[in-house]
Length: 509
Ligand code: XMP
Image 1 (spheres, rainbow, N blue to C red):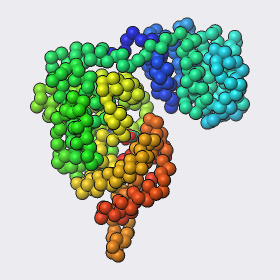
Image 2: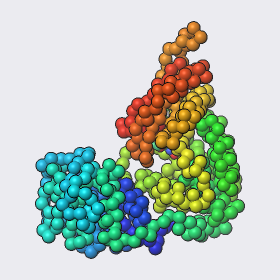
Image 3: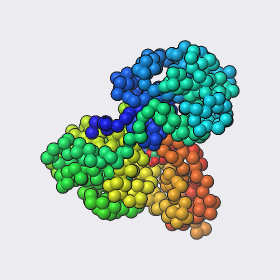
Image 4: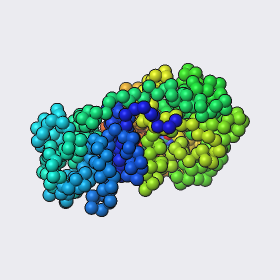
């Protein structure tokens, strides 16, 4: 489907800041449809926007030349909100003074509110907000009103002409007091109606799939996760029996996973065709130790198996559960570093020669969940912990062998049983075991043994972009260690990974 039409639209111009994504998401939480665009793309879509938000960014307003888009936004006569770098940029193009801050501010910062009407309606006299800047707006643009100030930002917020606003802090970050209130105030002043409800689109998503596929046949690559399940459910409604959900068993799933996926998808009316390709995956993974190479091989073989299935079924279309962050992360930021190759994100269809159907490519995860609930998804699926596409292959260090996967599976089951048994799983993002390639000496039954080291990883996170280690009760950790060493003869030692993300990632590979 093209973008959702008929909704009011807030344009978020992404100057490369860490939080542009989060701004767009918060706007949608405030029930307004938002779209992210690079400064280059923004000029084109500006005309269609009802309001514009200029994001933060790593540059100084004196280095990068983004004046043109800031000016265009101001001159368009539309309501504009600048955040951090966007705030400085607006001040600059309107004739204010921007320069090195007398005291750069990073992290939690106290701000004095000078005017609690309009943008800062409902704010107390002083608030703690999240800042991250070296430059600051030192003098407001002529004719602008200063709304707030801090030690390092003489003009921490300003208003110009009743429709252009700037804030030095990051209202989109949860550590900022009243972030949603500020965004909501701006959107109300801007007159952008609350009309965004993702579930209203179900009918048009179904129509769109139908018009794309015509009387053809489509396969849906399903994993049991929320995104692919919702995409397959929509396609099922559109195509009926001409939609075949396909679940590829690469032999790297946690214990019980294949059965769980089959059971839950069947109960939703989309029983998957299970293709057991495990021998092929293990064969292709022989001798491969490099983590990225492992991911690439799995991606390639996955694509091959999918293509063969499509051929067998006479399908020309592939339904995928790609969501908006996947699209943004794999395309819109050309300078971004590839941290890990996610085989289910982008890249597949070109090689596959299948026509891609991605009904969810304009949606965030929470929106997909809302759509899913409307389609009958249960909490069990909606709240399922993510399992990486390559499965246990990235939780077994070094070469992937049948034996190592067998050990990793048991360790993983023990971790799950203990954490879920203790009722701790609700607050956690993920909890799993990693079979490391380290060995350690142990003593079992009075005999020396030299076995594997298993690492336990348990993290809390909101969106997997950052994560902190869970401070699990010792008794639970000790029980996990004692069970793993007791029930798996090949393991002599269990360690707890206490590294946050960043600097570590959540998975080990
Ligand atoms: P990292 O390890 O990058 O993981 O901090 C962030 C989140 O993404 C999951 N993950 C994947 N999910 N395909 C996926 O669908 C993949 O290839 C993949 N690799 C990592 C990981 O489990 C965590 O929740």
